[in-house]
Image 1 (cartoon, rainbow, N blue to C red):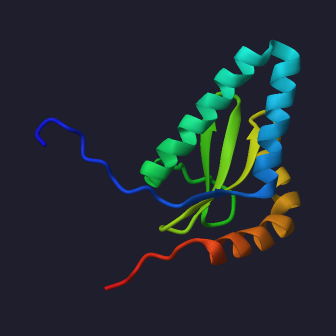
Image 2: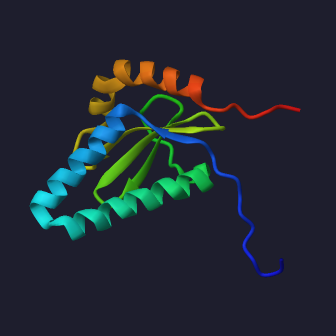
Length: 129
């Protein structure tokens, strides 16, 4: 149909247990500090960011001093830390921008590496020619 935007297929996206914990902590802190409505608005922004990443993972910005494959996407005061292999995205963590992100990621690396491998094995692989 003319004038209708063309829908692009979504890139598979999963969140690690760490990322899910981070989101629960953001929600708890935000509700306590600013109330339910503000917390919901903030979480909606993060959800919208995840939707944008699924539609176009090329919007992920590469970090300057992290391991290859790690990408950041900023949402206000938080960074979505993602592993993107060109066909699927795994959100590793959602960290506050005030943290020393490279140091924190180095601490989390062993735990996240194992979870990335597990999640990648569960994601559908693109079919080849």
